Length: 63
Image 1 (cartoon, rainbow, N blue to C red):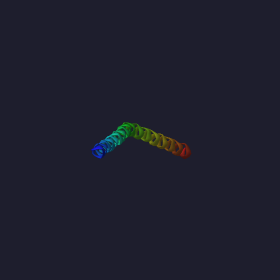
Image 2 (tube, one colour):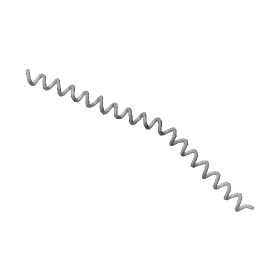
Image 3 (cartoon, rainbow, N blue to C red):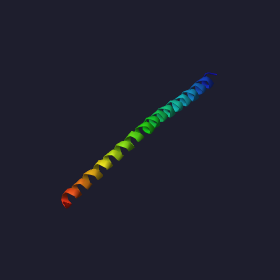
């Protein structure tokens, strides 16, 4: 009877562990979903800066 109870307890613990790791993964994904937008905006901003600087340099060199 003791072995049966321990086996059930172990299964419950492993199930809880799986749920906990899944929730951690989901929270990481949630943070990533929120941050990838800002990362995208930042990347676009940097690209715009680079394009602006290169066009200004080209204009300065040509004149």
